[in-house]
Every structure is written in structure tokens, then in C-alpha cells.
Amino acid sequence: MAALNYLALPIDPADGFPQAFRLSLGVRTYRFRLYANVAEDLLDDASGDLLDLPARRAFLVLSVDREEPAGLTTILRRKLAPGVEYHAAELALTFPTMLLDPRNLNGAGSFGSRVVGGVALR
Image 1 (cartoon, rainbow, N blue to C red):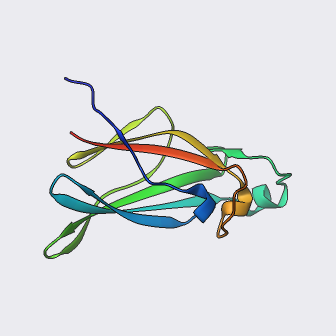
Image 2 (cartoon, one colour; image 1 turned 60 degrees about the vertical axis):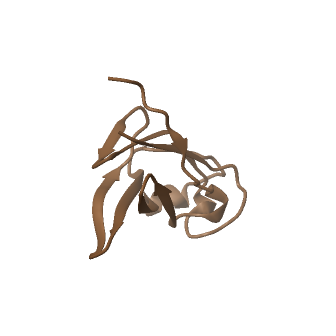
């Protein structure tokens, strides 16, 4: 099997989470949604440190919908972990970096959060 060439997903952590974007790949268009689920007590104890996700009681979730003539079809909804290649129908996805500043939960701003994801047609 040939190695896949991943394209960088247009994730901008400064826009905050949740966030969503549309992306055309090949002849299809997809809607990506990312949100973070973080336990309230982790936010209370936050001292400006970045959360390295996934962590105990904190994780990032990705949902991918394919736009079709009949409407949206969900092809993936998963908690994300680094080092895992996710298959969603004709897509492959990877998320090597997920660092989240709690201030980017439901809030925009440049606080040092870094979320890097890639997508490829398979």
C-alpha cells in the first residue's frame, strides 16, 4: 500500500472550539466539526497550562459529514488520539498534535493552542 499524502486541515485554534469548516476533496465536499470535551474541574484548576489531548477527562472530538444531493451523511464521529490514522469512507485522517489552552473553549484568541490535522483521499 502506498503512503498517503496528507493535506493540512484548515484548523485555526485561535478561532476557538467548537469550530467547523467545509473542505472540497476530489469531487466531494465535506463538513468538519471539532469540539473539545473537558471536565469542569480541569478548567477550575487550569493555571495557564496547555492541555495535551487526550488527557484524563479531556479530549477532542471530530465529526465529518459528506455533502450529498439528499443531504449530509455522517461518515465519522470520534474522539481523537495522536498517532492514529482514522478511516472515514474514502478519507484518511490523522491528528499528530492537539494542545489546547482552556481559554480557547468557547472563546477566540491566540493563547498558544495548537491543533494539527491532516486529510487524504484513500
